[in-house]
Image 1 (cartoon, one colour):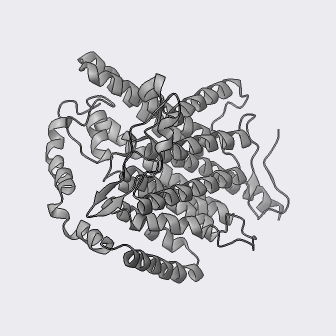
Image 2 (cartoon, one colour):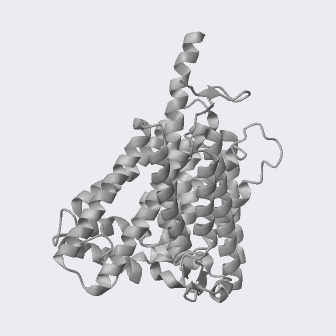
Image 3 (cartoon, helix red, strand yellow):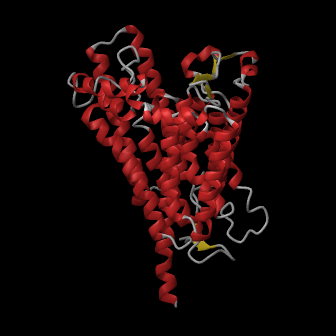
Length: 454
């Protein structure tokens, strides 16, 4: 039987695990295509003939799910590692509850205009299943994991640069997508708050844009600290700090409480993991960047401070807090499995809180399963950090866990699963948490025979 073996010249404990026939580079390629479709193409753009089901990233996720199923049927490896199974089990429970909730809602009877959005929500969930499962089962080596994380960092940096360009020009810069035959895309405009532009990037909403960037920020910081995860690299070591600066600047000029809170959570969670020689530089650099933004953009400081100082009088804050009073009434209609996944439309109420929305649509069972996805992903990231001896794997495990923590916080201010970009990024990162858990566990297991030999 073949065994895992170390790569010549690799750090101690850094192993390349024997991949399944369908895993490895092809999984990285599939996930990279998904990432490009998710970030580079506007979230509101869709193939006209397919309507709401025609978003390219969602369709590619379905392709990945079919590919995963076919590959599993053909694979001669039947065993599933327990370390990778905890996230899979939590997600499977979530999907089952969503299907039961949907079935109960349909049997209960729904208005005609709610059936189609609910069906679309299930298709979107199946697409995210393809992303998560390919990431968990397809990424089996440290090098493959680092490759896809680097590409997430590059994509986030480009997205942040687009947002900054939109801020400067006060234009979406995406109008050319509307001229592509067969593509339907609503007109995207740059909104304002307090006289300062709020940019969406390629997202549908500025909050979706901010959530996507802040979710990727811990991973980009990890890449910058480790010089792109090549610890002996001596050339171009400052390059990875460019996307960190772009994402940080985007958060500062976002004119959004959620964006600033997300940036703060990402920075605070990653700061303890930074080497001491970096901490002062990062803090000073952040202060200088914030000061430059305030000086260059008139009204930014006053508007940002007013977001927090005047939060109690802000209509969006009042809507969020006032909506919490109404939550028990909505949940009481079906407390166990909810009113139906994807059936609670904005016409009933807009909570801007994904946790509340899950509780209403999927009930008590749904919120438990949803929380389990976060907890198992965080546990997997920290578990890899504890088990592995490779510096890159340890840092990546911590960064992935920090990203999931950040998303958990941001989902309390934004119904992120209702938007394709933020939802897609969430399940991609959760899948990578499962992958790194497997890598870290195998690294730990490999140390036992090595210790016996010594």
